[in-house]
Length: 203
Image 1 (cartoon, rainbow, N blue to C red):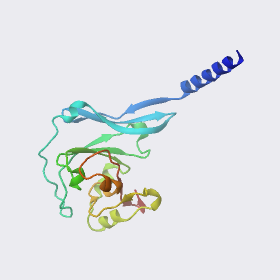
Image 2: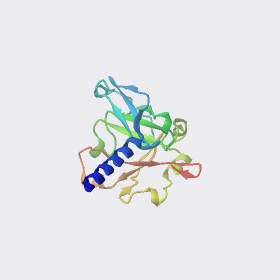
Image 3: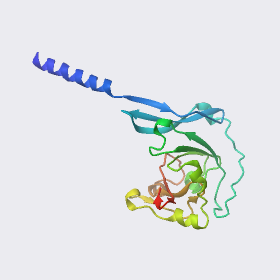
Image 4: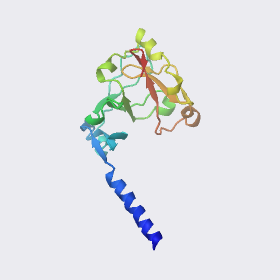
């Protein structure tokens, strides 16, 4: 009987702790994408963000543009057309650490074409504001700032910086070297890092 009483007390304490935890999802404003919509969201526990992401409706996959103009990027001969939708994050977590999300549609894919040469979305979480991103021209002195390597503590062991991956409005791309060794033709869920030097900081 004593063991049952202790077990019941432990269960009661566990349920009480769960009840006290404040966990909820918050959504940013929805944006029209294709024939549907997309939005950014965050999961908050006890007032702190613990997860963030992007969701979109099924209809967002229909009616996407296919005839976008080629970008005017003389320094990037392999640049492909893209359409970006800016998704605002919920106000309560903006700047913790992300400012906004870029939801990019690539109708023709992009380099390296053996891996990413199919229509797909890229989801970019930006620490910089939209105005600060406009300053990333990837030309002249700004190209040198983009190429400045961040401290090693910010780079995962398997990540590399391939040549020609500095993109205007984005920065310098670092990718997992396992991608090129394991896959040649299949597109999956990949995580890349982008850096740019601003105000003596590499972001």
